[in-house]
Image (tube, rainbow, N blue to C red; front, side):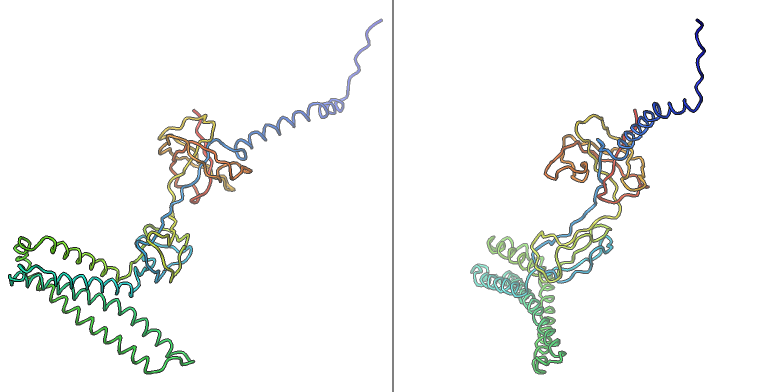
Length: 365
């Protein structure tokens, strides 16, 4: 019996079999491949992570005092050398007490001068003149310290006088004005006297070599110590100006006007305008070899995923803690992961900000 011919199938049957048997597998393979590529390129954690270096400068108090003025506010733009505020190093009353103690020590030195020095008129005149100069300087510094107190009292009386409630009487304002003007005149006269004494000491300076040969060493040392301490107290009478160290923005204000600050206490934080480096880490296991001057692609995590080429500046020698924001999402804040740090130059055209997280890709070898 002859074999029957094969019955031909219509094309619709072939298309139906292709759609049922082949198309699902092919679609699954394509989607799986695209998912892997997307995860590795955009979503999944990479072994190279980095953070744009934050350029920060901290303005602190050089010594203890009171913050009498603050000229900037939060997010204000500043330039290098711009005055930011002023600090009054010490209370005028405290300075007056210290100056009184200094005057007492100077008086003791005056009374304790050696009898042999008293017999030499020229040398004694020089020492006496120098002691008088120090005494007048101490008196002048005391008056300047008192001037701040009288100025505040005058301002207070003027505020009360201008108040509608009338707590201050007119004669009290007149007394405050009289005391302030009297003290100002006394300061001017004392300043002239100190200047004249200083000029006289300058004229007698050539004779100081002879005095140094014969005056006791203890007296000379005591005079130098008193002069240095008096100079320090004179410097504390003026205010200290805080200046900006870099061009940038005020990103933090830690103390306000009128507050007392300690030596080294943080007052302001300045953030630079233009970061130049990226602090990068190689996560463990370390499977790549990063070398100096190697080119690296720096890729932003923003919407446009901008990328540019940077260059490795330096590589660390040991593992360091990785910033928590560079770790994958869901990582516990209590977990500390270590990686190999290295620095990469920030490409100029890459639009990223200081502190922003970026990804890095090494070029294929």
